[in-house]
Length: 229
Ligand code: CTP
Ligand code: CA
Image (cartoon, rainbow, N blue to C red):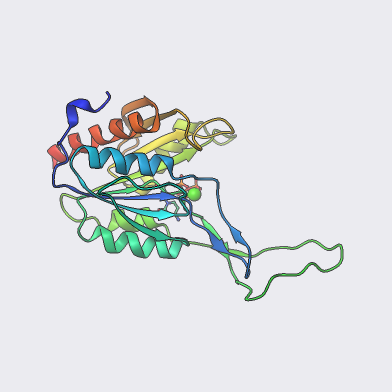
């Protein structure tokens, strides 16, 4: 589905999309971060705008311009992203967590630059960040849809789909968009393949193509779900 049939089907709907990757400061000059570029989140914002939505992106370190008519809020840390998303969610009809969120942050943030001590190593103590998606899902208003993403790799304890289904059940989002990540998939401005799971972990749709095509495929499901509530 290219979404052309969907022109205007999100008219007047308020959509909030997080994009990019959060960074957690370690000291005065360093941070823990990830390689997310924000392309998928920005493509979703663009696609939602094309379909008539009133769109806000909450961007964590995204080095891309937003399209015309899209509101942008820039944030850095997971705590900032969480606060911005909760504030926006109060008036949003559709909330999409496309950002790659740091799962941990350094327990202490040094005000100075951490120095080497001889040839010794360095052990960092990390503490968990808040789970923004879980909180948004728990606070969901009647009629509001919450969409999450999951970047999965297969491993000894399960396949991509098994991990994705377990995560869908754990998060409880209306739609969890699952993409397999690896060196050549998922990151940057490259073609993408996404499977969409419901809150029970069942696959409801899939879409493959450019990030804009994938974005429209996801929004097709958002429109379908909006008609169900
Ligand atoms: N997410 C979030 N807050 C976090 C971590 C993740 O809101 N602290 C959101 C992401 O934006 C995404 C979804 O949760 O929409 C799934 O993220 P993912 O990293 O795949 O799942 P985790 O629950 O963090 O599990 P893990 O990294 O261990 O696979
Ligand atoms: Ca994670």
